[in-house]
Image 1 (cartoon, helix red, strand yellow):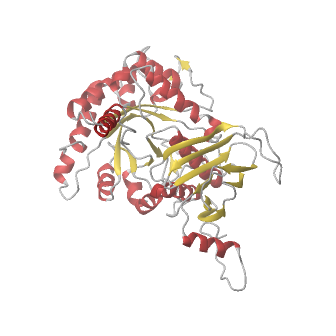
Image 2 (tube, one colour):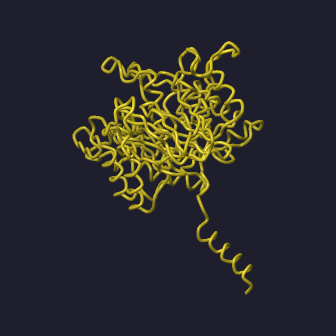
Image 3 (cartoon, helix red, strand yellow):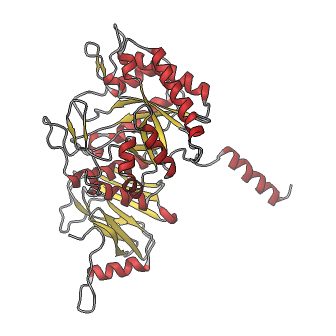
Amino acid sequence: MRPLKLLLLVCVLVSFIYPGEPKKEAPLYGLYTWGNELNKNLELIKDTGFRIICMPLDESDTEKGYKCAVKNNIEVAGMLVCNGFVNKNMDLKGWRELVNKSLRRFGPNGSFWAENKDLPPRPVRFYIIGGEPGTELKPPGEMMPDEAYYLMLKAASEEIRGYDKAAKIVAMSPIGAFSGALSRDTVNTKQKIMGPYAFIRGVHKYGGAALYDCIDVHPFTHPMPPDVGGVQEIFKWLKEETKKNGGEKPIWCTEMGFPLSYGMANPFFFTKDQAADNFVRFLALCARHGVQTVTLTYPEDQYSVSGRYKGYGIYSLNGKMRVAAKAIKLMTDLLPDPELLSVISDGQTPNPEPVKCSYEPYKDSPYFCYKFKGRNNSEVIIAWTSGKPFSYEIEGLKEKNVVLYNRELLGGVVCAVKDNKIKIPISNVPIFISNEVTDQLIKNTENYLKVGKDIKWAPIYGAED
């Protein structure tokens, strides 16, 4: 065989054995919402860069919201909540009827599409069996939440896979409590409460791993930031736990937010600036750990059934972006489909230690720094610390200039690279470093930084104040 033919054969075999990265089945950036809030905040949602929403399929305004999503090329992941059926003496029949009704309405060839022929058919591909069951399920007798959820998941899986074999089932969704009072391994038989690790292990013990395709958690960490609250640990644990039970599964986070307030008992958690930084830090950690989809909570502040105020909104009630939405938009613009290129620092103390300058060289400042593939094949580094700020040199930069962004400088400031590195302050505010430099960005930076008689000064977008 000729060498060229042999080489081609080897390339074919290698591509067959190592097919490369699997195609992403769902976008990373999403939002948890309802039909009425989707319609109300549609332009803001599109502008922020959300491409998928998680929406309950049994709400009164679902149909209006679904139409709005399809018309605007936003995917809908449908949520089905079994809590009420469990708490009504394990009503498996009623639960099956709800699942089946949703499938035949919003699934392939469903009645919704038959009645809306003007819409491009975009049936539900992902069914989320949610409702934070580890704490919300109160089954009868001595049954615990893990067994009750397994039975509900089994029934839902049979209905979904019997109707649409291509559909994906997203399961579990225990509330995080990874930094709160409820331990990850809590099992309280009297109150019928299970921590997230105990709950997931329990469902797997009953055989639940074979019944779903993606695993979902709600890793709330308030009042702590996501990295301090340990979301990276939960992602690692989920990968190992699913590996032990039939193979690693994609991770979803269908609820995650950083509330400004949470009722009278907790009137303050984060400032608007802190919430914005935490959203970016969380999304960066999700991208670093390969989380498939995140649907953040919520478009607007909410009131619970009991009337408790929940200040999660990334948009204000008067229809404007809060700082959090602007920060998320910055990230979705720079990293529309983030692909991890390298881990520069994964929360370690800076090494080498920061050289002494205007900032002290702190040894207790966990440093996070990741490089991703960004828009237009650019490379984007995200860096921050969860501790005290310090000044540090980012190395390995090959370009003459890079552009720096954060939530205060949304328009980007061009920075000169010297000896393949730049020295910048690392703080709790994530900084983006992009190698996508344009002439316009250079002009904007000169206008912003070199104020003089012959220059008409105007601020970089984001620094108007």
